[in-house]
Length: 389
Image (cartoon, rainbow, N blue to C red; front, side, top):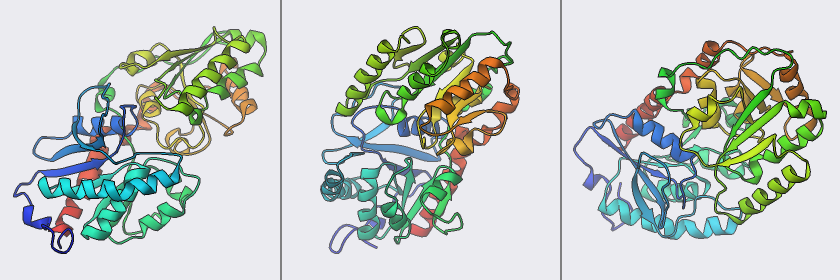
């Protein structure tokens, strides 16, 4: 099973070792968390003789978080783009770069994580005739490509939650489909729990949101919800939003419009954009509730981190939130509905909703810790590697 006819075969360069070498195809130009946070969490619980995680990113990649990952670079790869033609156009030259890399440095497993690298992975599966893993970290509006990819020979699809499988119309019983969650840092389970969040009727409410300042995160929905509340209710709410504004035109436009909305609405004391942080845990402990207003949030690492320290969460009833925030561990509001979000905020302020105790909230996500998620990926990698050999 060679790479292509007349080319050096992958198996000819197979390393005689029990350590699996995995190349994670990401393609990012900057370190914005998300997939890279998951890979760091997995790396932190991986023994050196089990798996070597390598990450394929764009030339000029800027790392702003720690610890560092083991990078390989591509001139052509594109992780994500709203321009579908751009994604398709980059696939062939990026695949050629990938093929050249593998000829020089063999890998046991190719594992794609973004829409752009999915196309590269499909080419690798079809032309190299070898198993390739694709973990879908997004809720796409157009699902056809992902359903088609899941049925291709040698392609193994991972979705993050049962609701994501439902969104894409994928049967959980499909032989090459796995449901494996994103994960949070194992160390969080060893930290003290939050204090009980039982509230008195007139207590202030400290909210925290964590995530990129970009349109699909819908931080503006929070401002719109506060605008529907009375001045007395608004005065009792403080929300700090921690996260960078990605270096993208659409993100800069959204950042500007969000700040204008907060200013015009007189909410500068209620909603504050704090910028990026390397210490989410300490920020969580300064708040009472976690909030994430986006629709179809796939499987938020920050949300899992909040639940892991025992903090209840206010989220839209969509995407991975449906699977992550269990009954009693928080509240759901109708997606894209500022009035519904406002009503749930009033329920918290008034004390009409009492969340479970922090230990029960932590227990609701313990299966999504890095060590347990890594075990699932390690089993998948080992099975595919056996098939390859």
